[in-house]
Image 1 (cartoon, one colour):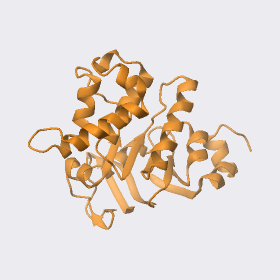
Image 2 (spheres, rainbow, N blue to C red; image 1 turned 90 degrees about the vertical axis):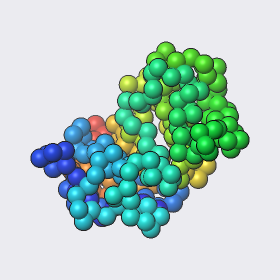
Image 3 (cartoon, helix red, strand yellow; image 1 turned 180 degrees about the horizontal axis):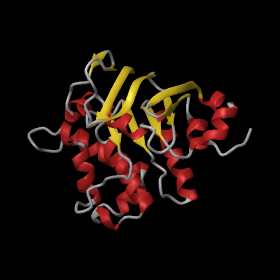
Image 4 (tube, rainbow, N blue to C red; image 1 turned 45 degrees about the horizontal axis):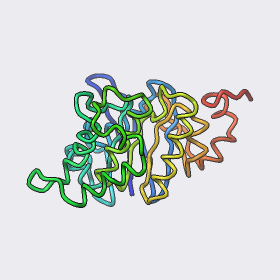
Length: 241
């Protein structure tokens, strides 16, 4: 479904991604593990079109090169990005945030019956959002804002969801809830590329995983294999050899 080959990207003179090659197959959860500053968020931003890769970087989605496309075109093709820090629109209500998520699907600036139905599905998945539909997003708890960010992405009807640190700053009981949500979204035939600080949880739910260090992929394997890898355990899972 998603194929990256020798992807390089930079912020000005700072070369962040260095010959990154990864893929996500249809129906998979793929986790990307690495320390702070390793390039994880930059990789998701590059896939979603927020950062343009260097020339000769290949980013294919369903066989089409998307490396030069703007973000709105990439969303229309079926990739939704839930950024780190949730990034909901604080001055809009919960309902309005969800409507923004459907903006690439609007017909003559009007909500269609399909979009209305998809917003209702988000409310079914996240009943707390229905209870707070008319509240401003700034008034929600961290966990509720994360649900809203995920719900906003779902309204775009993604085939592939990019999730950047979905459990960041959440209480332990909410972390479990977020990972249950990720599993249920995947069960509904949405592929997922997950960046997550909680490496143990990320690898437990992953079909496959990649380890990124200093902008380079240094290891890949099944999620279960990486969990048992002593080097990965020592570096990222807090487990000594």
